[in-house]
Image (cartoon, rainbow, N blue to C red; front, side, top):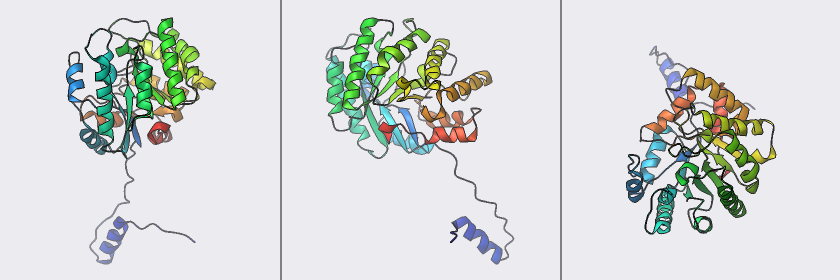
Length: 329
C-alpha cells in the first residue's frame, strides 16, 4: 500500500485552487543542509578569558551563548573544548596553576551540564605537566566529563622531535585509551616559538604516539594546522603524511578523525580550495568532521556557509554534515 505525505503547504495550495484564487504554489523547498554537530567549540569562564586576553582579545562565553550560536547555525550538538590548558603555558609562571586548571575544567563541565542534550564537555591540560595524568584521571571520573580530553601542542610547547615529549604523550594517550576517553588535539607545533613542524613530526605521531590509543577516537583539529585558511605549508606537509596513511588503510589511522575548524574560510582562494578538497578526498570524507572554532558570535553560521562553497560533490558535503564522532553521539 502506498503512503502519501501531505504537508501543510500542499493543503494550502489545494485550498487556494478550489477557491479559484489563482494563487500559484511552487514545490516546497527542501530544508537547507546543516551539520549534525560542531566538533570544535569553546566556552571561556571570565577568569580564563581574562588570563588569555594577555595575548588575544577574548570575551567570556557561557553555555547559553553557545547554544544560541548553535541555534543560529542550525546545528544540534557541539563538542565543548575546555581552555584550561592555557593555565599551563610554559612561558608564564602562575601561582596555584593546577588549581586553576581544575577550576576551569569544572566550570566548563558545569556549563555544559545546563544543556546536556546539546553540549559535551572535554577537559584539557598541558600534557607535559606533572599533574597531567592526575587531571586526566580526575576528569574521567567527574560528572560531566569522562568522554574525552583536549590537548593543544602549540600552547603547551609540545615538540614531537623531543623524545621526552613523545614519551609523555605516550603516557597520556595510553591513559586516555585505558579510560575510554577520546583525544582531541591541536597538533601544530608553536609558530611563535619557531618549533619544527611538518612531515617528520607527523610521522612521529603516526608511528610512536597513535599506537598507544588504538581503541578511542583521536580527532586532529584544524586539519593538522591551526588556521586560518589552508596556506600553512608545514601543516599541509603534516596532513599529507596522515592522509597518505589513511588512503593506504594504515591500521593506526582506524580511529583518527579530522576537523576542518578555522581552515575553511569564506575568502579561501580557489587554488587552496581545490587543494583542500583533494586532501579531504584522500583522507576519506567519512572521517572529516565539521567544526567552526568561532572567534565571535557571528562566525558559527559563516563557517558552515564557507564549507558549502568548497568544490565538493553534494553527496560529499552531505556526508560531512552527517558525520558525528562517537564521543558526541
